[in-house]
Length: 283
Image (cartoon, rainbow, N blue to C red; front, side, top):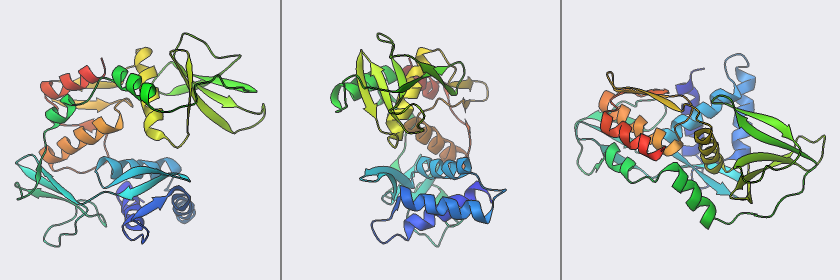
C-alpha cells in the first residue's frame, strides 16, 4: 500500500463521518489496526502517521483537541492560487482530475475566480521567531508550573536530529529542558514536563504542536542542523526541523510552482527571499 492510497482511505473515513467530519484518536487506532492486519508487511504505524501529516500539510484536515485527546477534522472548502495555478481543497469537482486518488484535492492550471491569493513570503513575514513563540506560548497559556514529584525521571538530550532520553536524578534548574516524569519506577506511563525559566510546564502527550515547538526550541539551543538550502537549485531540504506551519507553506508553494503533489522532504522554488524569512524565524 502506498502513502497516497492510505491517505485516501483515511480521508474518506473523515469525509463520510456523520458527526462533524471528524476522526477521533480511538477510531484512528481501529483503522490503524485494520490496515496493519490487512497488509502486515506493507503498512507500519509510522507510514500511517506520515499519511496524516500529508493530509495536514495539504490543508485537507486539521487537528483539534477533544475530551479524549487529539482528533482530526475536515477543513473548510477553499481555493488558493499563485496566479499561475490554483489548488482546490475539499470541494468535489468532476471537471478536474484529483491529484490524489479518493481525495478532494485538485491542482488546476490558471487562476480561478474567487481563489485566495497565496504568497509564501508574505505569510512567512507574519510569523514570529521561535524564541518569541516559546516565550509567548508559556507566558500566556495555562500550565501546571509547580515542581512535580517523580519516581523516575528522564531528560531529552540531542546529539543529532533525533532525541535521546537519558535517566537523571533531578531536574536541572537554570537550563531549559524537556522531561519524562514517571510516577512509578517500573511503569511505562509518564507525563511530559518542560522546564523553562525555572518554571515547570506539564504538556499533554496529545498536544503535538506544543511538543514539536519544544523539540524545535531545544534543537536550536543545541545547534542541531534543522534544514539545508541549495541556493543554486533553489531547493530546501527538511532534515527534521521544519515546524508544521512552515512545512505547510513551503509544500503549498512547491505544489503551486511545480504542480507536483507527493510526500516529500525537499521543496523546490525556494528563492533567497523565502529562505531568508525562514532563517529569521529560526534565529
